[in-house]
Image (cartoon, rainbow, N blue to C red; front, side, top):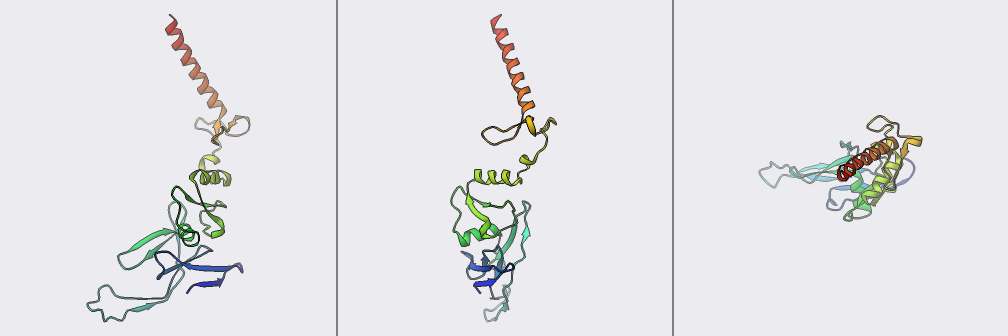
Length: 190
């Protein structure tokens, strides 16, 4: 196995062996993972003369983890199982190991899209800016503040750090702070 196969959209799908799992698994630039043909030996066999069973390679079915990312479990033998996110496998295989302090970004905001063309390494800040730009950040989608004021129009304040704040609440906090400071000054003056 290996090489190229015609994909769903008439794109050419490129397959490469996953580092550390070269003899067992491959991942494609389209975000699919497959096992290779192999011989599986029974772990309970009393002799090593057991011929083993031939297993044909197949495309692995990915399941979604609680955060919504596709995952597969890679198995080396009966005791070694390694659950991995598909996007991390694609980047590891086609780009290289994740640099320290970097994350895998989904450029189109779809956490289920693990195609190489949709992935890039980036900082946590870049990843969070992407979430805000794509509307996948729950704080960026909020329509009201904790006190029920609308987070839109003239009542929306966006400081330099990019957070969304309620102008009414900011004004009320500022007035409460100033009032508490005046009380302290009056107490010191007398």
